[in-house]
Image (cartoon, rainbow, N blue to C red; front, side, top):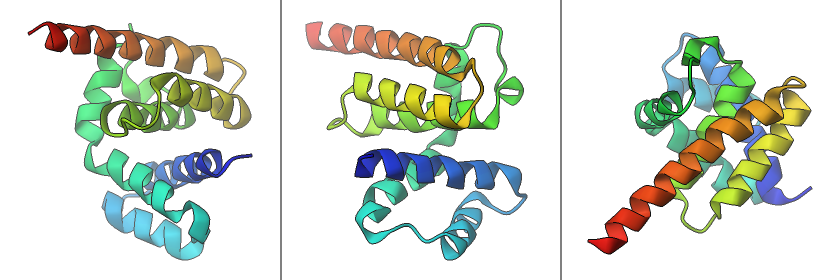
Length: 143
């Protein structure tokens, strides 16, 4: 398993913890890292993902909700939602990561940590976001 995959899995676990506690998100992340310190070779990408999702969660959640027909965020499993948050963060803020890679990683991790339906659910929403962002980028280039 690659380093980035392991960093994504650790980011998922940390965000799951952050969601399950009443502490402020960055404090909860710090507490998680005190108990489960990320390995040095994963730390940079892990922190970029975890802190990036936390710091941009409102924007990311709006994007996910716009593309999740008839699904409110509070009804989604925490695993699926946090994987989509990580992928959406990568879409928006990690231009070095191809969107298809982010989608495939989220699907694969979802199959491991989520339910039998997680892969298809995650794929449907992330693919919709990917197509939407692609259209926006094309429109920007035409201007």
